Image (cartoon, rainbow, N blue to C red; front, side):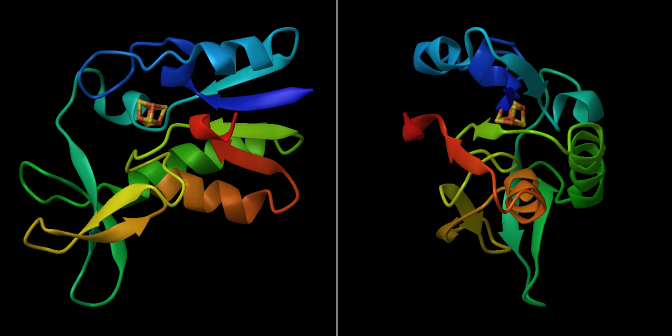
Length: 144
Ligand code: SF4
């Protein structure tokens, strides 16, 4: 069984703040399985890095932007996620980190262009994975 997992849940210190979010329940679940660590942000921005957020633009689009200067980093994250999808089309299970602008599933804060939270949604990588793997169980670490 091949399981794609947000790398920070496996204990990799790849979060923006240089920390991990190791989840023992996830580690127990993946024991004996083929594990594919996935972090779309670290290869692009390095670690540690500035925060990014999902922003609903005035044109009605959801984009991922750097908090510091508002620059749009959506395409880079899409590219990283597409690399994973192409490399592992046979994934059997996907476990993602909640609340992340990349990995969150319905838990990611959506901001307006002034930085106010206006709701919750998917991170950009999670959204792509949900569409690419419609028959695969995809949850965050709360799904255990
Ligand atoms: S939540 Fe996703 S993008 Fe953020 S550190 Fe974890 S694996 Fe990387």
